[in-house]
Image (cartoon, rainbow, N blue to C red; front, side, top):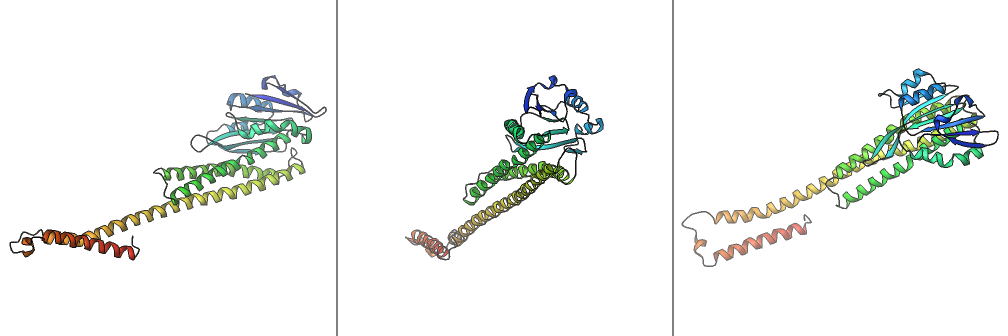
Length: 321
């Protein structure tokens, strides 16, 4: 549901209303608003962005199908579009989030619920009472929640990889283990695809002076960028773990195949002399004295069994089995 929150610095008061009820002409740096939309409706957003005073050309870039990421940073406004990783039924789904900030307000738009935005909804009142001086405090809360949201996703992929490694090392791997490893690989790629543009945004915001952001705010953004950098290293480590899991599974699979071939080879080796004996006594010659021996059949069977047992014991002593 689209909601608007108006923050009044003079009396530290917060009022809520529908987005349509907000008169943007009454907003100012002393009475700013947060407009939060749970849908990315191009027509409605264009209208709001233009009322916010944002350039039409840059607003149009947000809705281009080939632009997953946009970042426009100027002295009097910041306009950003990023993709957030959200857990889905099959791995992660990438959900677009649009954030616009001006001296008199901040606007967020996304498709459906987002954990990062929900976290801001849960903490904005307390934060406004302590640090709220401009729309930037919502901006900081939002980016902090976005960065923190990566950690549960990273832990989820890490746990999945650890379980997969335990399964194939203990011989409990199912037939779909390759699909599971591939799923982890896709999730890591989604995390990287989501984080990389955010790092570029944060690097630029932390390293450039803007009227919208105080020096103190830029220091805070610098800490967020450092946090992002550590998360990026964790994602790179996950990428290496996925490859290690795949290599480890292939090694275990190769070892299992080698063991199977070894067993088959031993069986064939034992059967070779037995087959030779059976072939010799299966020849249809008239003059074969053993054929007329009363107990010849049982003697030959006993020799064949003794030969097979002897060869099997030799293989076991040499630890070939």
